[in-house]
Amino acid sequence: MASASVFAALYAVLGTIPISKLVLGQGYFLTASNFVAPLSGMLFGPVVGGLAAIVGDAIDSYTGYVSLAGTGLSIVAADVAVALTAGLAFSGKRKAAFCLTLSVLALYWLDPLSVLFVGPVPFTWLFMIALAAFAPLLLLEGRGRISKLNPAFVVGVTFAALLCGQFTGTLVAQNLAVRVYGVLTAEEWRALARTFFGLYPVERVFFTAVGSLISLPVLRAFSRRRGST
Image (tube, rainbow, N blue to C red):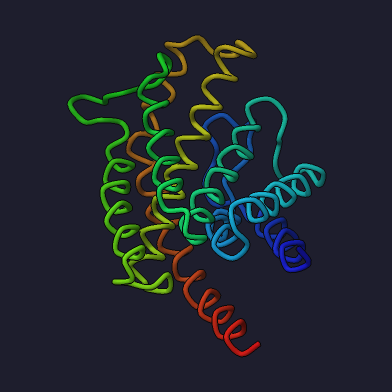
């Protein structure tokens, strides 16, 4: 818990560095904290890792760097989903990790507010690719064919976790904006969502690449430290 508290403080500091503007965020941004959101789950497990992310978000909300009011609650939901996915995968709860990501995908497709296709292309095409890679990686790790510190496993978990967070946040944002607060109509939301169809894959790949480059040496350092104690 002490380590998680330190990590929450780091998360909050990174939360002051803007990276990508939120579509529904009153001028707020996705921040550099997204680089370490999967790592919080990998290091501390789904519960403590998720709590560390929430505490970091709460600190940033208090200091004014992020809004957790209104549709800004989607930020917390996304961060918790990321930490849960990564934490479940790294704590050996592979079926739960995959079922969580699959459930988020299914809920997105079932929600009448969701944009399902842009032309002939599914809106969730990248999430579907991430899941297709996630399943065999979990299977291989479970059978001992690869280790949790294998770069392919770390990248795969990071990729799936970040996309799970992306669509969890989208689900929460669209329902708050349309059904709860009524700031947008369903058609206005769908028109807005289509504008970031070409942007979110670039954003998620970028966060995955940087997040994986950060996570790999940190995980190996923690592994060596635990092995020596």
